[in-house]
Length: 559
Image (tube, rainbow, N blue to C red; front, side, top):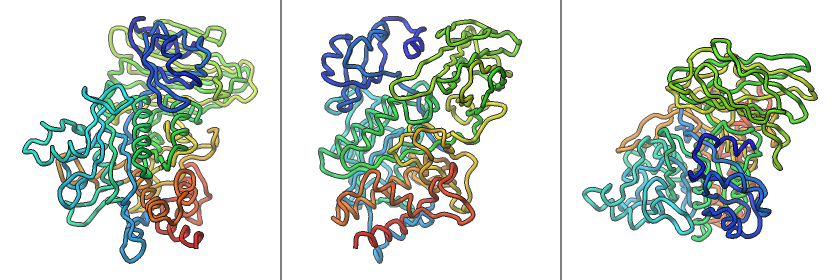
């Protein structure tokens, strides 16, 4: 009911995407629903089908569960020496450069003309560049986009007008900076800075933009991760994948199909997946409360200018019974709503509201209450909106509410009394990825923005560790370098470090099983920790990235 009703405004013939977890014949499922099926792996797929067929999905026995795509946003907000990377690259020590290990960049694209991504002879280090946002010939097994090969890019680089040959461009610069930190060779920086794995070759996926620059959807990330790992497995190279996008749409406990798929892919082939923890700690987008039986708590939300739509997602223990009531600034309300009304539609203060009481899924014990607000004739009134949460029958009483991730200029919408814990965004909440928070390596201090974890999550503490995230020197679109801040920039430090570890272990034959959770375990074990702080914790995880100590520890253990 929850999933279906989120689509209620769309015309019934409109095509929509749905993520499914399934078993058996995917072709049979597609035939029953009149859908186009896109297999991701043996358990996950994406269906494209008419809206009026969505309600029939669970009538097909092979479908175990389904969910709609989530909107994800870039996590943008170098200090290789502080992370122990330069020491490991040193010819007098390990002389690791990432050679023989692929790095997958799932992001906004890449400036393939930038010298940082070329070999000394001027040819590209990019093996494949899949631009999901253009029309052309996609990779085999995928339905959209255009796949450019190394040969295509080399032809473009030898042309007077490269973009007439390979028209892919990184319009926001996020992916270019991320790729540069992970694998840039510092070719035009005078040798001052280079990435963690400067001889790794690249697989780049440019995500389809969704509504606003920097936004995409979870289905595009799922396709991208599958493509990267499929390609690496076909070529026979280990791969380290970077995801610096995230969303607040979910329980933040690893239970969504989005997180489940990322988990399943991390177990496939010789793979490491690193994900930015997000920049939500100080964004004011998370509220934590605990209501007693017979008590009402009021949650105030400041809505900024020019929002035509907004959502809130409240997650609670299914054993508890709540009622909710949403008040507009003029004090008109939706009225008291309980779970006997699974779907409520009402218009208040010029805003059409839909309130949905979900139910536990096969993958989560918790219950979602979803609020959708859409301005009827203009923006939502930019004043204080108040949510009343009342405990009716309480066993636990704890609940969490999230607002969506928003671009920096639009962050005026926030809770009046936000909570900084449990602000790691999806899919960094997936159990088997390396979740990377950010810290200021110049001052050796935590940052106010880096997403924080909590024991509320099914899988315990996140992030796993932190890496430099403030004023990181990285390649910019059009050539040259610029300074970048955010956990988006922290994740590729770990992505590149994992590539160096896999070069030493897999490529050089020192440890053929050095991938997946084994890489994460060694990185967490050897992270730098302060004696004044108790670890692991919600800010630092197990500490800050220290690749040099990690390598020393591995060498000692295998000897």
